[in-house]
Structure formats: structure tokens, C-alpha cells
Length: 148
Image (cartoon, rainbow, N blue to C red):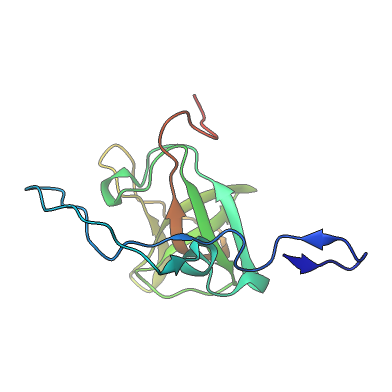
């Protein structure tokens, strides 16, 4: 615990660290189980590189499902107005947010979905970039947020 600005105790930086196991969980064949121990893992440090410019937005829809970004996930992104082709971005188009891959076609930026049921977005009047996605987060069990 740390001392807060009003002299009350508040959770410190390591308060939310969780035990870390260096033995991998197989998604195929079984492996031997054994007790690990000692190390701790900071979820915040793993997901957020630059807290001062980081934002989190809930994801609604499945236009990015082929790359594992699903309805109900959360996009963790760094607020910046520029991005590189191939990066996943939070874009603002016609006053609405969308998450897509930034692409380029004939010298013009486009927004590429990763779901065959959605078309590439070729904005005639351009769009703004809110930020570049650095991670996504999904909670299993009852969804925290969903468009359904």
C-alpha cells in the first residue's frame, strides 16, 4: 500500500500483480503439471506501455473477427493521430468510431475489415485516427460489455 495525496492508504503499484507461472498451458497435448512460484506479473504493465496516452474503448461488432478481435472485447490503444499502414487503428469516420486495419490503395488511406461480410472502407472525405491499438482484452464468462 502507498500513502495517497490525502494521507490515506491506497493500493500501490504492485497491489494488483498476480502470481506468474512460467510453465505454458498446452492448447493441444497435455503437459505435466507442477507448482511454479515466486514471480509476479503486472497485467497493467503487460497491456499498457504508455499510460499517459493510453485509452480503452469497448468493441461492438465483428468486422475484425478473423484476427481475433470480437464483439465485447476492449481495445487498448495509444492516442495518436498518425499510424503506419498495417497497424490496427481506432478511426473516426462521419462522427462514428471504428476499429480497422489501416491500408493504402492508389496512394489513398483505406480502412480494412477482417471479416468477409464487411467491405473495405474507402472514405471520400478522409477520416481521423484516434489512436493505434496496442492490445485487446477479453473477459470470459459473463460479458462486461456487449452490443447484444
